[in-house]
Length: 243
Ligand code: ATP
Image (cartoon, rainbow, N blue to C red; front, top):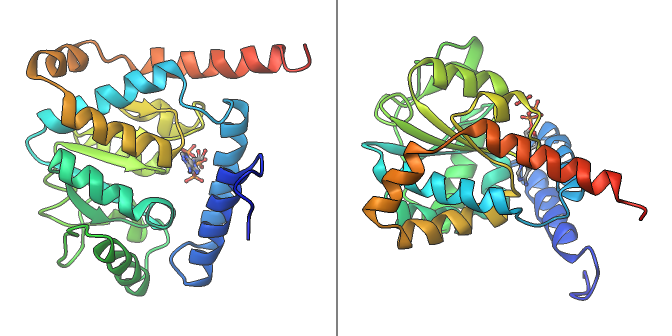
C-alpha cells in the first residue's frame, strides 16, 4: 500500500501498475526499461506539464479534430497506464483505436484489446497485414486503421516506426518525455509530457476548441520550437538544481 502523502506517490502508483501488467503479459520487460527512461526525463522536467507542452497538447487536439481518419495507436505501456483515459480521448476526438506492438504476439494483441474494451474503448479488429515500410512484424497494421489514417497519435513510439509513418505522408503526433529521441525529432508534433497527464489534456482541448483556433494551431505548428523549449526547461533546471 503506497501512502497518498508519499512525495513520489504518482510515480510509485505508475510503477505498481506497470509491473502488475508486466506480470499479466501486457507490458514486456523491454517496456519496463522504456518506462524507466520516461521517468528519468519526467524527473528532469519537474514532473509537470510545461507551458509549451500545453500548447502542443492543444495542437494535438486540433490535428485530431481536423483529421479525415484519425487513429490512436496503443501499445502495452499505454494500455497499462491509461486504458480509461484512451476511452475518454476516443469519445472526445472520434478517433479509431488500433493496438500496435513492437514485441507483437497475437496473445498480447488480444490481452491489450481486452483491457481496452473493458475500459469502454472501441478497438479496431481484423487481420493485420505487412503494410508499413519496416522489416519483420513491426510492419504489421490494419488496412482500415493505421494504413488508411491521415493523422496518427502514437504515445510512446519507437523512432523507426514513427519515421516509417511520416515517410508514408501521415501526420504523426508523438507523446514522448524524451525531447532528444528519434521519435520526438521525427514526428510532425511531439508532446513532451507524461502520457497520463498528456492524454486528459488533449481530451479536454478536443471538447473546447473552435474551428478558427483549430486552424490557427495547425498553421502555426512548429515541432522544433516545442522540442527546444523542453530542452531549455531541462537545462535550466539542471543549471539551477543546487541553487
Ligand atoms: P527512439 O527510437 O525514438 O530514439 P527510444 O529507443 O528511447 O526512442 P523506446 O525505447 O521505444 O524508444 O522508448 C519509448 C519512449 O517513451 C522513451 O523515449 C521514453 O522517454 C518515453 N516514455 C516512457 N514512458 C513514458 C511515459 N509514461 N510518458 C511519456 N513518455 C514516456
